Length: 603
Image 1 (cartoon, rainbow, N blue to C red):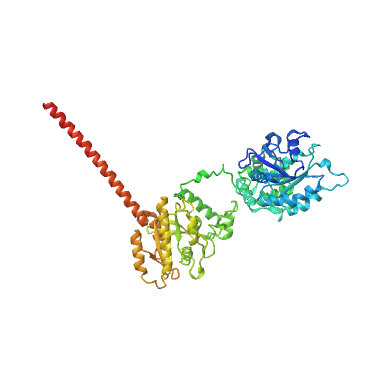
Image 2: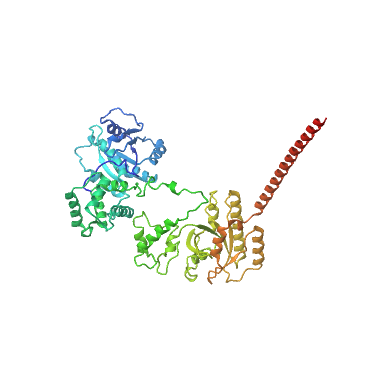
Protein backbone atom coordinates (compact mmCIF):
# COMPACT_ATOMS: atom_id res chain seq x y z
CA UNK A 1 0.00 0.00 0.00
CA UNK A 2 3.06 2.24 0.06
CA UNK A 3 3.56 2.15 -3.71
CA UNK A 4 1.19 3.16 -6.48
CA UNK A 5 1.12 1.64 -9.95
CA UNK A 6 -0.56 3.97 -12.46
CA UNK A 7 -3.12 2.85 -14.97
CA UNK A 8 -6.84 2.57 -14.35
CA UNK A 9 -8.14 1.67 -17.79
CA UNK A 10 -8.39 -2.05 -16.95
CA UNK A 11 -10.54 -1.46 -13.87
CA UNK A 12 -14.32 -2.02 -14.00
CA UNK A 13 -16.13 1.27 -13.47
CA UNK A 14 -13.24 3.53 -14.51
CA UNK A 15 -13.91 6.09 -17.29
CA UNK A 16 -12.65 5.06 -20.72
CA UNK A 17 -12.09 8.66 -21.91
CA UNK A 18 -12.30 12.20 -20.51
CA UNK A 19 -13.90 15.24 -22.16
CA UNK A 20 -12.65 18.65 -20.96
CA UNK A 21 -14.34 21.92 -21.97
CA UNK A 22 -12.32 25.17 -21.78
CA UNK A 23 -14.28 28.38 -21.04
CA UNK A 24 -13.36 31.95 -20.11
CA UNK A 25 -13.34 35.56 -21.25
CA UNK A 26 -12.10 36.60 -24.67
CA UNK A 27 -8.34 37.03 -24.84
CA UNK A 28 -7.52 34.99 -21.72
CA UNK A 29 -5.50 32.48 -23.74
CA UNK A 30 -7.87 29.49 -24.08
CA UNK A 31 -6.88 28.46 -27.62
CA UNK A 32 -3.15 29.11 -27.12
CA UNK A 33 -3.21 26.97 -23.97
CA UNK A 34 -4.79 24.05 -25.87
CA UNK A 35 -2.28 24.28 -28.75
CA UNK A 36 0.65 24.46 -26.34
CA UNK A 37 -0.56 21.40 -24.43
CA UNK A 38 -1.12 19.37 -27.62
CA UNK A 39 2.04 20.35 -29.56
CA UNK A 40 4.49 21.26 -26.79
CA UNK A 41 5.08 24.48 -28.68
CA UNK A 42 3.72 28.05 -28.85
CA UNK A 43 1.85 29.21 -31.94
CA UNK A 44 1.42 32.99 -32.38
CA UNK A 45 -1.42 32.52 -34.85
CA UNK A 46 -4.34 30.43 -33.62
CA UNK A 47 -7.97 30.60 -34.77
CA UNK A 48 -10.54 32.15 -32.39
CA UNK A 49 -12.04 28.73 -31.67
CA UNK A 50 -10.19 25.47 -32.24
CA UNK A 51 -11.81 22.23 -33.40
CA UNK A 52 -11.88 19.44 -30.81
CA UNK A 53 -8.34 18.45 -29.83
CA UNK A 54 -7.62 14.83 -28.91
CA UNK A 55 -4.71 13.93 -26.65
CA UNK A 56 -3.89 10.20 -26.88
CA UNK A 57 -3.77 7.86 -23.89
CA UNK A 58 0.07 7.79 -23.86
CA UNK A 59 0.08 11.49 -22.92
CA UNK A 60 -1.14 10.57 -19.43
CA UNK A 61 0.07 8.17 -16.72
CA UNK A 62 -3.42 6.70 -16.33
CA UNK A 63 -3.56 5.73 -20.03
CA UNK A 64 -6.92 7.44 -20.53
CA UNK A 65 -7.33 9.61 -23.68
CA UNK A 66 -8.58 13.19 -23.38
CA UNK A 67 -10.68 15.32 -25.74
CA UNK A 68 -10.32 19.11 -25.24
CA UNK A 69 -13.17 21.31 -26.43
CA UNK A 70 -12.47 25.01 -27.12
CA UNK A 71 -15.40 27.44 -26.81
CA UNK A 72 -16.42 30.86 -28.08
CA UNK A 73 -16.61 33.86 -25.72
CA UNK A 74 -19.27 35.64 -27.79
CA UNK A 75 -22.57 36.29 -25.97
CA UNK A 76 -24.53 34.94 -28.95
CA UNK A 77 -22.77 31.57 -28.58
CA UNK A 78 -23.75 31.01 -24.92
CA UNK A 79 -26.34 28.34 -25.76
CA UNK A 80 -23.73 26.39 -27.71
CA UNK A 81 -21.31 26.62 -24.78
CA UNK A 82 -24.03 25.44 -22.39
CA UNK A 83 -24.61 22.37 -24.58
CA UNK A 84 -20.90 21.55 -24.55
CA UNK A 85 -20.81 21.87 -20.76
CA UNK A 86 -23.61 19.30 -20.45
CA UNK A 87 -21.40 16.75 -22.23
CA UNK A 88 -18.23 17.60 -20.31
CA UNK A 89 -16.47 15.58 -17.61
CA UNK A 90 -14.48 18.59 -16.37
CA UNK A 91 -14.20 22.35 -16.97
CA UNK A 92 -11.04 24.43 -17.32
CA UNK A 93 -11.94 28.06 -16.49
CA UNK A 94 -9.32 30.58 -17.66
CA UNK A 95 -8.30 34.09 -16.70
CA UNK A 96 -5.31 36.19 -17.79
CA UNK A 97 -2.65 36.80 -15.12
CA UNK A 98 -1.90 40.24 -16.62
CA UNK A 99 -5.56 41.37 -16.59
CA UNK A 100 -7.05 41.53 -13.05
CA UNK A 101 -10.53 42.24 -14.43
CA UNK A 102 -10.63 38.71 -15.94
CA UNK A 103 -9.90 37.29 -12.48
CA UNK A 104 -12.77 39.32 -11.03
CA UNK A 105 -15.04 37.93 -13.76
CA UNK A 106 -14.59 34.42 -12.37
CA UNK A 107 -16.65 35.16 -9.25
CA UNK A 108 -18.79 37.87 -10.85
CA UNK A 109 -19.94 35.91 -13.91
CA UNK A 110 -18.39 32.56 -14.80
CA UNK A 111 -18.72 30.60 -11.56
CA UNK A 112 -22.30 31.81 -10.86
CA UNK A 113 -23.15 30.99 -14.50
CA UNK A 114 -21.82 27.44 -14.12
CA UNK A 115 -24.00 27.07 -11.02
CA UNK A 116 -27.01 28.43 -12.91
CA UNK A 117 -26.42 25.84 -15.63
CA UNK A 118 -26.19 23.17 -12.86
CA UNK A 119 -22.72 22.11 -13.99
CA UNK A 120 -21.86 19.49 -11.37
CA UNK A 121 -18.42 18.47 -12.62
CA UNK A 122 -14.90 19.34 -11.44
CA UNK A 123 -13.69 22.88 -12.19
CA UNK A 124 -10.00 23.72 -12.67
CA UNK A 125 -9.06 27.41 -12.70
CA UNK A 126 -6.11 28.18 -15.00
CA UNK A 127 -4.28 31.52 -14.82
CA UNK A 128 -2.87 31.93 -18.33
CA UNK A 129 -0.20 34.33 -19.68
CA UNK A 130 1.88 34.02 -16.53
CA UNK A 131 4.84 35.44 -18.47
CA UNK A 132 2.99 38.75 -18.93
CA UNK A 133 2.31 39.36 -15.26
CA UNK A 134 3.81 42.51 -13.76
CA UNK A 135 6.95 41.50 -11.84
CA UNK A 136 6.41 44.41 -9.46
CA UNK A 137 3.06 43.00 -8.34
CA UNK A 138 3.97 39.52 -7.21
CA UNK A 139 1.02 37.96 -5.36
CA UNK A 140 0.91 34.25 -4.58
CA UNK A 141 -1.71 32.07 -6.25
CA UNK A 142 -2.98 31.06 -2.82
CA UNK A 143 -3.62 34.69 -1.87
CA UNK A 144 -5.45 35.31 -5.12
CA UNK A 145 -7.61 32.19 -5.19
CA UNK A 146 -8.27 31.38 -1.52
CA UNK A 147 -11.28 33.75 -1.14
CA UNK A 148 -12.78 32.52 -4.41
CA UNK A 149 -12.33 28.85 -3.48
CA UNK A 150 -13.94 29.47 -0.10
CA UNK A 151 -17.01 30.85 -1.88
CA UNK A 152 -17.07 28.29 -4.69
CA UNK A 153 -16.22 24.87 -3.22
CA UNK A 154 -16.75 23.22 -6.61
CA UNK A 155 -13.27 24.43 -7.70
CA UNK A 156 -10.99 21.42 -7.44
CA UNK A 157 -7.63 23.10 -8.02
CA UNK A 158 -5.92 26.20 -9.45
CA UNK A 159 -2.80 26.43 -11.56
CA UNK A 160 -0.89 29.19 -13.33
CA UNK A 161 0.63 28.57 -16.76
CA UNK A 162 2.23 30.10 -19.81
CA UNK A 163 1.70 28.85 -23.36
CA UNK A 164 4.55 31.07 -24.61
CA UNK A 165 7.11 29.73 -22.11
CA UNK A 166 5.67 26.18 -22.17
CA UNK A 167 5.15 26.42 -18.44
CA UNK A 168 2.63 23.92 -16.98
CA UNK A 169 0.38 23.94 -20.07
CA UNK A 170 0.12 20.15 -20.20
CA UNK A 171 -0.24 20.02 -16.41
CA UNK A 172 -3.51 21.96 -16.63
CA UNK A 173 -5.14 19.08 -18.51
CA UNK A 174 -3.36 16.44 -16.45
CA UNK A 175 -4.94 17.91 -13.32
CA UNK A 176 -8.29 18.24 -15.09
CA UNK A 177 -8.15 14.57 -16.09
CA UNK A 178 -7.06 13.61 -12.59
CA UNK A 179 -10.08 15.33 -11.01
CA UNK A 180 -12.33 13.20 -13.24
CA UNK A 181 -10.51 9.91 -12.65
CA UNK A 182 -9.83 10.58 -8.96
CA UNK A 183 -12.44 13.09 -7.71
CA UNK A 184 -12.38 14.20 -4.10
CA UNK A 185 -16.13 14.80 -3.73
CA UNK A 186 -17.42 11.20 -3.56
CA UNK A 187 -14.70 10.18 -1.07
CA UNK A 188 -14.12 12.98 1.39
CA UNK A 189 -16.16 15.64 3.19
CA UNK A 190 -14.02 18.79 3.31
CA UNK A 191 -16.11 20.39 6.07
CA UNK A 192 -15.94 17.46 8.50
CA UNK A 193 -12.54 16.28 7.23
CA UNK A 194 -13.79 12.68 7.17
CA UNK A 195 -14.52 9.92 4.67
CA UNK A 196 -18.05 10.07 3.29
CA UNK A 197 -20.49 7.33 4.42
CA UNK A 198 -20.74 5.63 1.02
CA UNK A 199 -16.94 5.51 0.74
CA UNK A 200 -16.73 3.99 4.23
CA UNK A 201 -19.27 1.31 3.28
CA UNK A 202 -17.40 0.41 0.09
CA UNK A 203 -14.04 0.18 1.88
CA UNK A 204 -15.61 -1.98 4.60
CA UNK A 205 -16.85 -4.38 1.91
CA UNK A 206 -13.38 -4.51 0.36
CA UNK A 207 -11.84 -5.18 3.78
CA UNK A 208 -14.24 -8.08 4.41
CA UNK A 209 -13.53 -9.56 0.97
CA UNK A 210 -9.78 -9.43 1.66
CA UNK A 211 -10.07 -10.83 5.20
CA UNK A 212 -9.99 -14.43 3.98
CA UNK A 213 -9.87 -16.08 7.42
CA UNK A 214 -12.66 -13.81 8.75
CA UNK A 215 -10.76 -12.91 11.92
CA UNK A 216 -11.45 -9.18 11.67
CA UNK A 217 -7.90 -8.18 10.68
CA UNK A 218 -5.70 -8.25 7.58
CA UNK A 219 -2.63 -10.38 8.22
CA UNK A 220 0.68 -9.79 6.39
CA UNK A 221 -0.28 -12.42 3.79
CA UNK A 222 -3.72 -10.86 3.29
CA UNK A 223 -2.22 -7.37 2.99
CA UNK A 224 0.18 -8.69 0.36
CA UNK A 225 -2.64 -10.33 -1.63
CA UNK A 226 -4.55 -7.05 -1.48
CA UNK A 227 -1.50 -5.09 -2.67
CA UNK A 228 -0.87 -7.43 -5.61
CA UNK A 229 -4.53 -7.37 -6.68
CA UNK A 230 -4.75 -3.58 -6.64
CA UNK A 231 -1.23 -2.46 -7.59
CA UNK A 232 0.35 -5.52 -9.26
CA UNK A 233 3.33 -5.53 -6.89
CA UNK A 234 3.92 -7.14 -3.48
CA UNK A 235 4.91 -5.28 -0.34
CA UNK A 236 8.26 -5.94 1.30
CA UNK A 237 8.15 -7.01 4.98
CA UNK A 238 9.69 -3.67 5.97
CA UNK A 239 6.95 -1.82 4.09
CA UNK A 240 4.22 -3.78 5.86
CA UNK A 241 5.79 -2.98 9.21
CA UNK A 242 6.00 0.67 8.18
CA UNK A 243 2.29 0.77 7.34
CA UNK A 244 1.34 -0.82 10.66
CA UNK A 245 3.64 1.51 12.58
CA UNK A 246 2.11 4.63 11.00
CA UNK A 247 -1.39 3.43 11.88
CA UNK A 248 -0.50 2.38 15.42
CA UNK A 249 1.12 5.73 16.21
CA UNK A 250 -1.97 7.67 15.16
CA UNK A 251 -4.71 5.16 15.97
CA UNK A 252 -3.75 2.35 18.39
CA UNK A 253 -6.98 0.38 17.75
CA UNK A 254 -6.11 0.30 14.03
CA UNK A 255 -3.71 -2.60 14.59
CA UNK A 256 -3.92 -5.70 16.79
CA UNK A 257 -1.94 -8.91 17.17
CA UNK A 258 -3.63 -10.38 14.08
CA UNK A 259 -2.93 -7.44 11.78
CA UNK A 260 -4.61 -4.30 10.38
CA UNK A 261 -8.19 -3.82 11.61
CA UNK A 262 -11.02 -2.31 9.60
CA UNK A 263 -10.61 0.91 11.62
CA UNK A 264 -6.94 1.03 10.64
CA UNK A 265 -7.79 0.27 7.00
CA UNK A 266 -10.21 3.21 6.88
CA UNK A 267 -7.69 5.46 8.63
CA UNK A 268 -5.04 4.68 6.00
CA UNK A 269 -7.35 5.72 3.17
CA UNK A 270 -8.32 8.94 4.95
CA UNK A 271 -4.58 9.63 5.32
CA UNK A 272 -3.95 9.00 1.60
CA UNK A 273 -6.71 11.45 0.68
CA UNK A 274 -5.52 14.12 3.10
CA UNK A 275 -2.04 13.92 1.53
CA UNK A 276 -3.49 14.27 -1.98
CA UNK A 277 -3.01 10.64 -2.99
CA UNK A 278 -6.58 10.11 -4.11
CA UNK A 279 -5.43 7.83 -6.92
CA UNK A 280 -4.53 5.19 -4.33
CA UNK A 281 -8.04 4.96 -2.90
CA UNK A 282 -9.65 5.20 -6.35
CA UNK A 283 -7.45 2.40 -7.69
CA UNK A 284 -8.58 0.19 -4.79
CA UNK A 285 -12.25 1.06 -5.30
CA UNK A 286 -12.10 0.47 -9.06
CA UNK A 287 -10.25 -2.83 -8.71
CA UNK A 288 -13.21 -4.00 -6.66
CA UNK A 289 -15.73 -2.79 -9.24
CA UNK A 290 -16.83 0.66 -8.05
CA UNK A 291 -17.56 3.57 -10.38
CA UNK A 292 -17.33 7.32 -9.73
CA UNK A 293 -20.61 7.23 -7.78
CA UNK A 294 -19.14 4.48 -5.57
CA UNK A 295 -21.65 2.00 -6.88
CA UNK A 296 -20.78 -1.38 -8.36
CA UNK A 297 -20.18 -0.97 -12.09
CA UNK A 298 -22.75 -2.05 -14.68
CA UNK A 299 -20.46 -4.81 -16.02
CA UNK A 300 -20.37 -6.44 -12.58
CA UNK A 301 -24.11 -6.17 -11.89
CA UNK A 302 -25.68 -5.84 -15.36
CA UNK A 303 -29.26 -4.64 -15.26
CA UNK A 304 -30.08 -7.30 -17.88
CA UNK A 305 -29.92 -9.88 -15.06
CA UNK A 306 -33.06 -8.32 -13.59
CA UNK A 307 -34.98 -7.56 -16.76
CA UNK A 308 -38.62 -8.55 -16.70
CA UNK A 309 -41.80 -7.82 -18.58
CA UNK A 310 -43.90 -5.01 -17.05
CA UNK A 311 -46.51 -7.48 -15.81
CA UNK A 312 -43.97 -9.88 -14.27
CA UNK A 313 -42.62 -9.91 -10.72
CA UNK A 314 -39.75 -11.65 -8.94
CA UNK A 315 -40.02 -14.43 -6.39
CA UNK A 316 -37.09 -15.65 -4.32
CA UNK A 317 -35.87 -19.18 -4.91
CA UNK A 318 -35.42 -21.59 -2.01
CA UNK A 319 -31.64 -21.14 -2.31
CA UNK A 320 -32.02 -17.35 -1.97
CA UNK A 321 -34.35 -17.74 1.01
CA UNK A 322 -31.87 -20.03 2.78
CA UNK A 323 -29.05 -17.55 2.11
CA UNK A 324 -31.09 -14.68 3.56
CA UNK A 325 -32.02 -16.85 6.56
CA UNK A 326 -28.32 -17.34 7.22
CA UNK A 327 -27.61 -13.61 6.93
CA UNK A 328 -30.49 -12.79 9.28
CA UNK A 329 -29.25 -15.31 11.86
CA UNK A 330 -25.66 -14.03 11.54
CA UNK A 331 -26.61 -10.45 12.41
CA UNK A 332 -29.35 -11.26 14.95
CA UNK A 333 -26.74 -11.24 17.73
CA UNK A 334 -29.10 -12.01 20.62
CA UNK A 335 -31.09 -14.60 18.59
CA UNK A 336 -34.46 -13.08 19.52
CA UNK A 337 -35.93 -13.09 15.96
CA UNK A 338 -35.69 -9.32 16.03
CA UNK A 339 -33.17 -7.34 13.98
CA UNK A 340 -32.76 -4.15 15.97
CA UNK A 341 -31.99 -0.89 14.09
CA UNK A 342 -28.26 -1.16 14.88
CA UNK A 343 -28.18 -4.79 13.72
CA UNK A 344 -29.88 -3.75 10.46
CA UNK A 345 -27.28 -0.99 10.04
CA UNK A 346 -24.50 -3.53 10.60
CA UNK A 347 -26.04 -5.91 8.07
CA UNK A 348 -26.08 -3.24 5.34
CA UNK A 349 -22.86 -1.51 6.44
CA UNK A 350 -21.10 -2.61 3.23
CA UNK A 351 -23.94 -1.55 0.89
CA UNK A 352 -24.09 2.01 -0.53
CA UNK A 353 -27.12 2.67 1.71
CA UNK A 354 -29.46 0.68 3.89
CA UNK A 355 -32.65 0.02 1.87
CA UNK A 356 -34.72 0.31 5.04
CA UNK A 357 -33.83 4.01 5.33
CA UNK A 358 -35.28 5.26 2.06
CA UNK A 359 -38.64 5.45 0.33
CA UNK A 360 -40.59 3.32 -0.49
CA UNK A 361 -39.08 0.77 1.94
CA UNK A 362 -38.76 2.98 5.00
CA UNK A 363 -41.55 2.20 7.45
CA UNK A 364 -43.09 -0.26 4.94
CA UNK A 365 -42.54 -3.47 6.92
CA UNK A 366 -44.08 -4.76 10.11
CA UNK A 367 -42.07 -3.82 13.23
CA UNK A 368 -41.68 -6.03 16.25
CA UNK A 369 -42.62 -4.84 19.72
CA UNK A 370 -38.94 -3.89 20.15
CA UNK A 371 -38.95 -1.74 17.02
CA UNK A 372 -36.96 -4.19 14.88
CA UNK A 373 -37.67 -6.55 11.99
CA UNK A 374 -38.85 -10.14 12.29
CA UNK A 375 -37.51 -12.64 9.77
CA UNK A 376 -40.76 -12.50 7.76
CA UNK A 377 -40.56 -8.71 7.60
CA UNK A 378 -36.87 -8.87 6.63
CA UNK A 379 -37.56 -11.37 3.86
CA UNK A 380 -40.47 -9.44 2.31
CA UNK A 381 -40.10 -11.30 -0.99
CA UNK A 382 -42.24 -9.76 -3.71
CA UNK A 383 -45.08 -12.00 -4.73
CA UNK A 384 -48.32 -10.02 -4.98
CA UNK A 385 -48.65 -6.27 -5.35
CA UNK A 386 -51.92 -4.63 -4.45
CA UNK A 387 -52.80 -1.07 -5.49
CA UNK A 388 -55.10 0.58 -2.93
CA UNK A 389 -57.40 3.25 -4.40
CA UNK A 390 -60.07 5.37 -2.78
CA UNK A 391 -61.12 8.93 -1.97
CA UNK A 392 -59.51 10.95 0.80
CA UNK A 393 -60.55 9.91 4.34
CA UNK A 394 -61.98 6.60 3.11
CA UNK A 395 -59.69 4.57 5.38
CA UNK A 396 -56.82 3.62 3.05
CA UNK A 397 -54.04 4.68 5.43
CA UNK A 398 -55.70 2.97 8.39
CA UNK A 399 -55.95 -0.22 6.32
CA UNK A 400 -52.20 -0.17 5.56
CA UNK A 401 -51.32 0.64 9.16
CA UNK A 402 -53.37 -2.27 10.47
CA UNK A 403 -51.82 -4.54 7.82
CA UNK A 404 -48.50 -3.74 9.51
CA UNK A 405 -49.92 -4.73 12.90
CA UNK A 406 -50.32 -1.18 14.21
CA UNK A 407 -53.30 -0.50 16.44
CA UNK A 408 -56.03 1.88 15.34
CA UNK A 409 -55.45 4.13 18.37
CA UNK A 410 -51.75 4.58 17.50
CA UNK A 411 -52.34 5.44 13.86
CA UNK A 412 -55.25 7.81 13.49
CA UNK A 413 -55.09 10.38 10.73
CA UNK A 414 -54.67 10.03 6.98
CA UNK A 415 -51.99 10.84 4.46
CA UNK A 416 -52.09 12.24 0.94
CA UNK A 417 -48.71 10.73 0.01
CA UNK A 418 -48.05 7.48 -1.81
CA UNK A 419 -46.77 4.82 0.57
CA UNK A 420 -46.17 1.09 0.84
CA UNK A 421 -46.82 -1.63 3.38
CA UNK A 422 -45.33 -5.14 3.19
CA UNK A 423 -46.26 -8.19 5.26
CA UNK A 424 -46.76 -11.94 5.10
CA UNK A 425 -50.25 -13.40 4.75
CA UNK A 426 -51.05 -16.89 6.05
CA UNK A 427 -53.02 -19.00 3.58
CA UNK A 428 -55.55 -21.59 4.66
CA UNK A 429 -53.21 -24.47 3.76
CA UNK A 430 -50.47 -23.19 6.07
CA UNK A 431 -48.27 -21.61 3.38
CA UNK A 432 -47.36 -17.91 3.37
CA UNK A 433 -47.44 -15.27 0.66
CA UNK A 434 -45.98 -11.79 0.75
CA UNK A 435 -48.36 -8.96 -0.03
CA UNK A 436 -47.18 -5.47 -0.96
CA UNK A 437 -49.89 -2.86 -0.56
CA UNK A 438 -49.30 0.43 -2.39
CA UNK A 439 -51.54 3.32 -1.39
CA UNK A 440 -52.44 5.53 -4.36
CA UNK A 441 -53.52 9.05 -3.27
CA UNK A 442 -56.76 10.23 -4.86
CA UNK A 443 -55.00 13.05 -6.68
CA UNK A 444 -52.28 10.68 -7.88
CA UNK A 445 -54.55 8.47 -10.00
CA UNK A 446 -54.30 10.60 -13.14
CA UNK A 447 -50.50 10.69 -12.88
CA UNK A 448 -50.45 6.91 -12.52
CA UNK A 449 -52.08 6.59 -15.93
CA UNK A 450 -49.36 8.64 -17.62
CA UNK A 451 -47.72 5.36 -18.63
CA UNK A 452 -49.49 2.70 -20.68
CA UNK A 453 -47.88 0.03 -18.49
CA UNK A 454 -48.82 1.61 -15.15
CA UNK A 455 -51.16 -1.26 -14.22
CA UNK A 456 -48.77 -3.97 -15.41
CA UNK A 457 -47.17 -4.38 -11.98
CA UNK A 458 -50.55 -4.50 -10.22
CA UNK A 459 -51.71 -8.03 -9.32
CA UNK A 460 -54.92 -6.82 -7.71
CA UNK A 461 -56.61 -3.46 -7.07
CA UNK A 462 -58.58 -2.66 -3.92
CA UNK A 463 -61.06 0.23 -3.77
CA UNK A 464 -61.79 1.54 -0.27
CA UNK A 465 -64.77 3.72 0.63
CA UNK A 466 -66.28 5.05 3.86
CA UNK A 467 -69.47 3.01 4.39
CA UNK A 468 -71.11 5.91 6.25
CA UNK A 469 -70.57 8.42 3.45
CA UNK A 470 -72.53 8.13 0.18
CA UNK A 471 -70.20 10.56 -1.63
CA UNK A 472 -67.22 8.38 -0.67
CA UNK A 473 -68.98 5.37 -2.22
CA UNK A 474 -69.69 7.26 -5.44
CA UNK A 475 -66.10 8.45 -5.75
CA UNK A 476 -64.75 4.94 -5.11
CA UNK A 477 -66.97 3.50 -7.86
CA UNK A 478 -65.84 6.26 -10.23
CA UNK A 479 -62.25 5.26 -9.55
CA UNK A 480 -63.13 1.60 -10.09
CA UNK A 481 -64.68 2.34 -13.48
CA UNK A 482 -61.71 4.52 -14.43
CA UNK A 483 -59.17 1.81 -13.54
CA UNK A 484 -61.23 -0.93 -15.23
CA UNK A 485 -61.63 1.18 -18.37
CA UNK A 486 -57.91 1.93 -18.49
CA UNK A 487 -57.10 -1.76 -18.02
CA UNK A 488 -59.41 -2.72 -20.90
CA UNK A 489 -57.86 -0.08 -23.14
CA UNK A 490 -54.22 -1.01 -22.42
CA UNK A 491 -54.63 -4.78 -22.12
CA UNK A 492 -53.61 -4.80 -18.44
CA UNK A 493 -56.90 -5.74 -16.81
CA UNK A 494 -56.62 -6.43 -13.09
CA UNK A 495 -58.85 -8.22 -10.60
CA UNK A 496 -60.62 -5.83 -8.24
CA UNK A 497 -62.11 -5.93 -4.74
CA UNK A 498 -64.26 -3.27 -3.08
CA UNK A 499 -63.72 -2.66 0.65
CA UNK A 500 -66.45 -1.08 2.78
CA UNK A 501 -64.45 0.56 5.57
CA UNK A 502 -65.57 1.99 8.92
CA UNK A 503 -68.13 -0.76 9.42
CA UNK A 504 -68.48 0.36 13.05
CA UNK A 505 -70.41 3.44 11.80
CA UNK A 506 -73.96 3.50 10.46
CA UNK A 507 -74.13 2.88 6.72
CA UNK A 508 -75.63 5.48 4.42
CA UNK A 509 -79.18 4.72 3.23
CA UNK A 510 -79.59 2.16 0.41
CA UNK A 511 -75.86 1.35 0.64
CA UNK A 512 -76.46 -2.41 0.41
CA UNK A 513 -78.75 -2.11 -2.63
CA UNK A 514 -76.33 0.27 -4.39
CA UNK A 515 -73.24 -1.86 -3.75
CA UNK A 516 -75.01 -5.11 -4.70
CA UNK A 517 -76.27 -3.68 -7.99
CA UNK A 518 -72.90 -2.19 -8.86
CA UNK A 519 -70.84 -5.29 -8.19
CA UNK A 520 -73.33 -7.56 -9.99
CA UNK A 521 -73.29 -5.29 -13.04
CA UNK A 522 -69.48 -5.39 -13.17
CA UNK A 523 -69.21 -9.09 -12.37
CA UNK A 524 -67.14 -8.87 -9.16
CA UNK A 525 -67.61 -9.86 -5.51
CA UNK A 526 -69.77 -7.72 -3.16
CA UNK A 527 -67.86 -5.28 -0.92
CA UNK A 528 -65.87 -6.74 1.98
CA UNK A 529 -66.89 -4.95 5.19
CA UNK A 530 -64.11 -4.10 7.66
CA UNK A 531 -63.54 -1.91 10.71
CA UNK A 532 -59.99 -0.77 11.44
CA UNK A 533 -61.20 0.66 14.73
CA UNK A 534 -62.60 -2.68 15.90
CA UNK A 535 -59.77 -4.68 14.31
CA UNK A 536 -62.28 -6.65 12.24
CA UNK A 537 -60.85 -7.34 8.78
CA UNK A 538 -63.12 -10.19 7.72
CA UNK A 539 -60.13 -12.19 6.34
CA UNK A 540 -59.59 -9.33 3.86
CA UNK A 541 -55.87 -9.91 3.28
CA UNK A 542 -56.39 -13.59 2.60
CA UNK A 543 -59.21 -12.68 0.20
CA UNK A 544 -56.87 -10.27 -1.59
CA UNK A 545 -54.29 -13.04 -2.07
CA UNK A 546 -56.97 -15.49 -3.28
CA UNK A 547 -58.35 -12.99 -5.80
CA UNK A 548 -54.82 -12.28 -7.07
CA UNK A 549 -54.21 -16.02 -7.52
CA UNK A 550 -57.47 -16.44 -9.48
CA UNK A 551 -57.68 -13.16 -11.41
CA UNK A 552 -60.27 -14.28 -13.97
CA UNK A 553 -62.93 -14.47 -11.25
CA UNK A 554 -62.63 -10.81 -10.19
CA UNK A 555 -61.88 -8.76 -13.31
CA UNK A 556 -64.62 -6.11 -13.66
CA UNK A 557 -66.38 -5.37 -16.94
CA UNK A 558 -67.44 -1.85 -17.85
CA UNK A 559 -70.39 -1.15 -20.16
CA UNK A 560 -67.94 -0.20 -22.90
CA UNK A 561 -66.04 -3.42 -22.34
CA UNK A 562 -69.24 -5.49 -22.53
CA UNK A 563 -70.25 -3.76 -25.77
CA UNK A 564 -66.83 -4.40 -27.24
CA UNK A 565 -66.97 -8.09 -26.31
CA UNK A 566 -70.51 -8.39 -27.70
CA UNK A 567 -69.39 -6.80 -30.96
CA UNK A 568 -66.36 -9.13 -31.15
CA UNK A 569 -68.65 -12.15 -30.60
CA UNK A 570 -70.90 -11.02 -33.45
CA UNK A 571 -67.91 -10.62 -35.73
CA UNK A 572 -66.60 -14.06 -34.77
CA UNK A 573 -70.02 -15.65 -35.41
CA UNK A 574 -70.23 -13.96 -38.80
CA UNK A 575 -66.79 -15.22 -39.72
CA UNK A 576 -67.77 -18.69 -38.53
CA UNK A 577 -70.94 -18.59 -40.66
CA UNK A 578 -68.95 -17.53 -43.72
CA UNK A 579 -66.47 -20.36 -43.06
CA UNK A 580 -69.27 -22.93 -42.71
CA UNK A 581 -70.95 -21.60 -45.88
CA UNK A 582 -67.72 -21.82 -47.81
CA UNK A 583 -67.17 -25.35 -46.58
CA UNK A 584 -70.73 -26.30 -47.66
CA UNK A 585 -70.10 -24.89 -51.14
CA UNK A 586 -66.84 -26.85 -51.40
CA UNK A 587 -68.58 -30.06 -50.26
CA UNK A 588 -71.45 -29.37 -52.74
CA UNK A 589 -69.09 -28.90 -55.65
CA UNK A 590 -67.21 -32.06 -54.73
CA UNK A 591 -70.44 -34.07 -54.58
CA UNK A 592 -71.61 -32.65 -57.91
CA UNK A 593 -68.27 -33.56 -59.53
CA UNK A 594 -68.54 -37.17 -58.27
CA UNK A 595 -72.10 -37.33 -59.54
CA UNK A 596 -71.14 -35.90 -62.94
CA UNK A 597 -68.22 -38.31 -63.28
CA UNK A 598 -70.42 -41.33 -62.50
CA UNK A 599 -73.10 -40.13 -64.91
CA UNK A 600 -70.57 -39.71 -67.73
CA UNK A 601 -69.13 -43.17 -67.10
CA UNK A 602 -72.56 -44.88 -67.19
CA UNK A 603 -73.34 -43.13 -70.50
